[in-house]
Image (cartoon, rainbow, N blue to C red; front, side, top):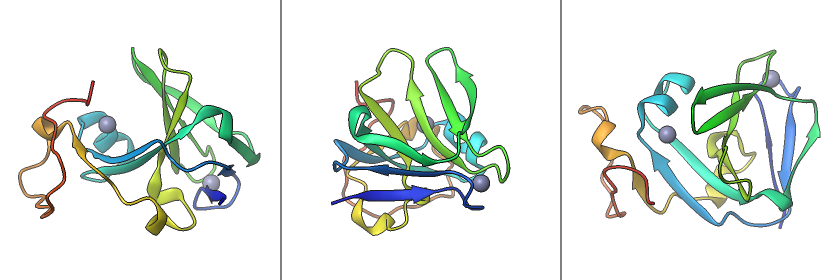
Length: 131
Ligand SMILES: [Zn+2]
Ligand SMILES: [Zn+2]
């Protein structure tokens, strides 16, 4: 199965030839600010299975621990990469052509969640990251 996606304007396209190793919601303030959404859903694909098939994203160092890649034309944020972990690419799963295939399995950084966001599910909730 191929997981494909891209930015809003179509300038950047990507695909992964393997399924994500994990999927979740991130409530951290950096994800919130950088996307403008109260929570971000992400899918961590194996780096070796992931490629950009069209265009080249811009990068932004969003914290000492990692950077974000985004389309410089439309601004869509595509992914987050941790500086210390070159094995996975955390795709913002809303950029997938079919986000239905990567249902989140847990929540992280719930300590930072906005109080008016109420997601009613029974998924595990981690106050900070999972590690
Ligand atoms: Zn774009
Ligand atoms: Zn986050």
